[in-house]
Every structure is written in structure tokens, then in C-alpha cells.
Amino acid sequence: MKALLGDISFSKCFWPLFAGVLIGGLLFVWSPGTFVLILYVFAFLVCLPVLGAAVWWLRRIGAHIGSGSRDEALRQEVHGQRRKLARLSRDRQGEAWATAQVRLATALGLLAEREGSSAPFEEALEALRAALSVFTRSKDHAKWAMTRHNLAITLFRLGQRAPGIARLKEAAASLRDVLDDETRRQMPDDWPAFQSLYGAILTELGMRDLGTERLREAVSACRAAAASDRAAESPVLQGEYLVNLAFALASLGAREGDTALLKEAAGASRQALQIFVKADDILTEAESARFRAVGHESLGCALRGLGAGSPNAGFLQEAVAAFREALGLYGKDDRPFDWAETQDHLGQTLRILGEREDDVLPLGEAVGAFRKALEVRTRESFPFYWAASTDNLGRALGALGQRSADDALLREAAALHRAALEVFEGADAPAYLAEARRNLEKAEAAL
Image (cartoon, rainbow, N blue to C red; front, side):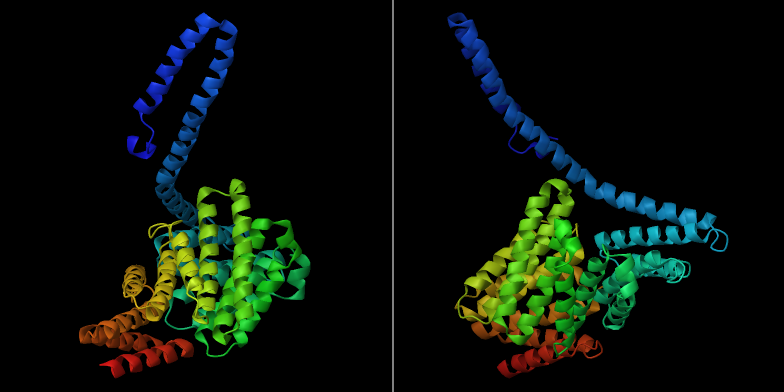
């Protein structure tokens, strides 16, 4: 327990109390009335920091225990829903059976996020497809739409882990079916969430394209969500929608070299961060950290885009600070996929800084960030993102090799680009494929 108390120790509490008793005794002899008044003031001043320390200590204990207990609670929920499904019959108890399938999928999805594994997502996908055999559009439009929304999230997460884009396209199609006038009429409060998710999926797809059509559609969907009445009524939701909008704007702005879009992305991220800070008292500690982390990440992406098109290194330095701020809010064990993504973003920004400046330190830090990302982004678990981080690592090593005239680093860089190309060539991601080919040509030309 003492290790969790930080600077609080018995000796630090004892000596102020001892001094207070001594001074209080002298004051009592001098004036009983003055003694009582000062005693109250002293008690307040002493007890307040002790109370604050106690609250801090309890929150640390909760966070320390909470991570493991959350995982165990999710596993118990999965086990409980599986047992319930074993007792239920789809034909005789269709509604309860489908509801249990949705709850099972929800628990599996949360568990997959925490573990960084794809297997729970695959099982969640099966459960949601099963639920949709009961929750049909004609029988219960609202439950059908919400289950399709959950299906789209699951497909999106699987699509991020797959080498190709089939799952991402299926996720977009699943949500596109929901975005009709009937859903908007029956579910006005949920409509913006559907739009925002649709925009996020299109952003992911658009990043892999060479064109801008999907990215423009993503921006349009995210704008509609952020400007909705529901967003105005719920600040936290508005913050989430603004973050998705910021990512879409930053992606489109970087693709087109459009400073106005990148500045808008930075503004949306800062607005979202302000919202999350103000909402801190209604969020759990884990929720607050997650929301603020993703806000800093989206801000970093916007600032990196601005820095890439500006001779001023200030934007890039701000971007590095934003990504490091995000990494300070959760660790590798908390949200491994998000942690690795932020490490990769940090590495890209440091690499740009290192190529601009006559200093190898940012390049070395970039290499370190990419290697950290690859601790999670393995070829087996996340083939596409393994290839992306491998290509980025190759580029950073290539820049170091050129700076130091080190042929070994240049050969390693070329080998990494070739390995990334093996994945990109079958991934239906022409933007990444073209970038990897350019990087390989540059590394081979430097040898």
C-alpha cells in the first residue's frame, strides 16, 4: 500500500500535528476563545491535504485493481451469455435469444479491444449475424438498425486487422443500409452516431485509395453528425463526433495539401478536447483518459499535416507533443491497438522533423516509436498495419543511413520496404502500395 501513497508518509503527517498541539496548548493558556478559532482553522488546513491524499489514494487503488477486474468481468459476462444461449431456443424464445446474442457480441468486442485480439471479434460477428435473423427490418426496425450498427463496428475492427479491404467495405455497406429515411424518422437520437461511424469507416477506406471521393463523403457524414441536434444536447457525443470529423478532415487535407482543411481539423480537435475536459466530472477515469487521448491524437494528425506543408517546424513540434500527451493517458496494456497507432503517428512526425533538421536524434526516436508500434502490430495479428509500420520504419532507417553513410542501415531499410510491399500488393490499398514503392526506389538508389 505504501508504494501507492506516493509522497504521503507518517512522518509528514506527524510533525504538523505535533506542532499544532504544542502551539494550541500555549494559545489556550493565553486565550481560550482564540484557541478554539485557530484550532478550527488548523484542523481544516491539516485535514484538507490528508483528505485529498486519501481520495487520490483510493482512485489509484481503483485504477490498479480496476484493469484486471474489468477484464474478469467481461470474461464472466461472455461466459454468462453463452450459458444463457445454451438454455434458450431461437424458435421458441426468439427475442430473448437474439438479445443474448447481441449482449454476447458486445462483451466479446470490449474484450477484443482490451486484448488486441481478433478472435473475439470473429465470434462477435457470428453472434450479431445470428441476432439479425430475428431482428429484421420489417419486424423491429429500431433493433434491426442498432444491431446493424454493432455489426458495422465489428466489421470495421476486423477490417483494420485484415490485409485487404473486404471487411471494411462490408462495414460501410452494413451501415449504408441503415442510413435511410425510416431510420432517421424512428431513431433521430441515434442517427448522428450512425453517420459518424459511417464517416470513420469511409476515412479508413479513403486513406487506402489514391483518390479523394471516399474522404470527401467521410467529411460530409462526420459534419452532419457533429452539427446535429443530438450533438448539441450531449457534449460528450459532440466531442466524439468532432474527433471523427477531425480525422476525416486531416486525412483529406493531407491528401490534397489543403491548409484550410487541416486548420479546421485542428480546430475541431481542440474543441473536442475542451469538451472532454469540461465533462471530466461525469466520465469515469478510464473514459476521460480514452476521450482525451483520441482528441490529442487527432490534433497531432492535423498539426503534422500542417507541418508537412510548412517550413516552420513549430507545427511538427506541437504534433509530437500532442502524440506524447496521448501516450501518457494510456499504456500498451490498456488499449494495445490504439497505443500502437499513436506510436506510429509519433514516429512519422519525428521522421519528418529528423529529415528537416541537421540532427539525427529525432530520426533515432522515430525508429524507436516504430519498433514499439510493431510490438503490437505483428504480421500475424495486424498484417496491414504491420506493413505500414514496417514501411515507416524502413523510411526512418533509410534517412539515418543516408545521414550517416551507413550501408547496413540502407540495406535494412530496403529489406523492410520489400517486406511491406509483399502485403500491400494484395491489400487493395493503392496509396500505401505507391508509397512503399517510392520508398524502396529511394533506398535502393542510396546504396
